[in-house]
Length: 108
Image (cartoon, rainbow, N blue to C red; front, side):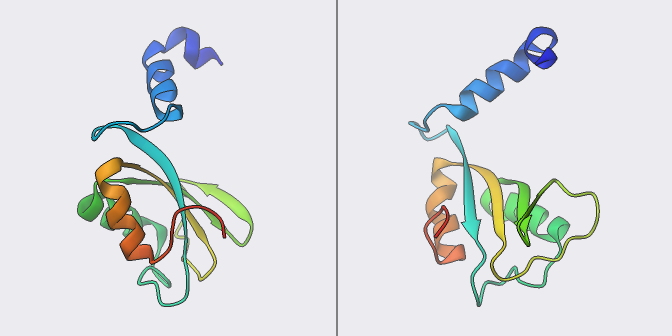
């Protein structure tokens, strides 16, 4: 809460992310389930973080791994089938991401 008082830019960013993505340059927080056959299975969090950023211009924020939320884990976390990747991406990246994950965003 103190961030909203002493860091007004944090407020602007938070409100922008929380609002609907309506334009080409808007960003949205998404989650994608890792399903069997996904190339990210067996890769560590940091490798996937950089791969997603370089190829799809999105940022991996965290992962639900074995039912626990890890936010930007500092340790090496190996991604498994059934994990959920939480990321922020722009509208243009959303369709590309659906194709690499071979699934719609969200929990299923």
